[in-house]
View 1: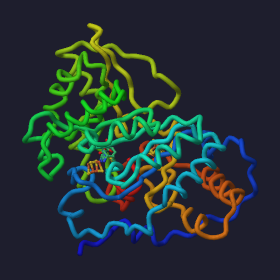
View 2 (view 1 turned 90 degrees about the vertical axis):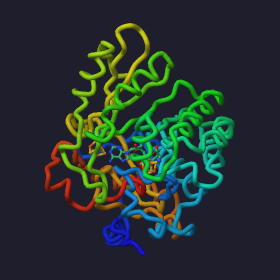
View 3 (view 1 turned 60 degrees about the vertical axis):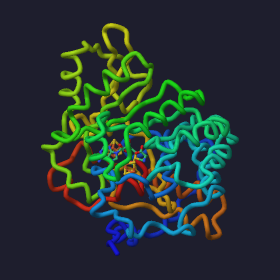
Length: 359
Ligand code: SAM
Ligand code: SF4
Ligand code: SF4
């Protein structure tokens, strides 16, 4: 059986120390003055893809020791936590994974979260299960969907997902999401030099004029298994230049403070694209995101080496006040700015895998 590298780190974690009481409604600020606004929740560490930049087949094979069901936070546990996070200023929830649509009954979780009220509910998926799930998710109260798609030609797409899923499955998922009323969608493409960078323009051509927004993401050194090298990164600046050479682009203002994607519009009015420059232009100074892992650990950064165990508190005697204090303790102590200090050495360090922590 394959070793589960991330868990050697996770197992060293201790419980969150008891902090002072924090009243509901208190806005939390970290050591850099950043408020807590977004929560990403990984609902499963499993996936039907083995994307080479995320869950490479050589490492995450069929016999990889994924989490067992009792280890996962239940929907009741997640909902209880989300209520507490909402009382501390969280406004946006992203359901992710692994592949979140593989978590049985995920639409029931969406319905429970929608009943809390005042939250923007979003989900990121590889799209292949959308034909049967999109309408159920819409009916449950999901607001928006982001679909990942790394190429339009069959050979490259299969090379990226490494399990032979055809592009047509994802395109069918996008169509189902549109039909269910989710349009316009965001379509995420991770760009890896020499592997799928020719698809930058393919996606631009395909989605121009559709209303959907393609967002080009720089390949990141998340986890410890994707063999990241700086040479594999195509800087967003180059992505914009390449698209502009065929379809001139003009820069747009951000929609809100802390927006991750830099926005560009087609000069001829055919819509917009985004670039996410996590490697070449760090946006840590406005990072308001916290991550809740599949088994209930809090991570204050995508590149964290350590999480904070909320599940043992949840499953112990902790009341809401104790949980609120624990959340505040974690956020108040947060100082992460990994992307501002990335070096070849930090990139090689062991970090938690993205599929577990939630991308
Ligand atoms: N399985 C779902 C999917 O692929 O959309 C949700 C989870 S996935 C971890 C979330 C996002 O992270 C996807 O858009 C994926 O492309 C992105 N991602 C994963 N590994 C990445 C990496 N090494 N660099 C940049 N983005 C990455
Ligand atoms: Fe699965 Fe998403 Fe990771 Fe690809 S990026 S392996 S679809 S979790
Ligand atoms: Fe936020 Fe960490 Fe990414 Fe910086 S590196 S933007 S702190 S998740």
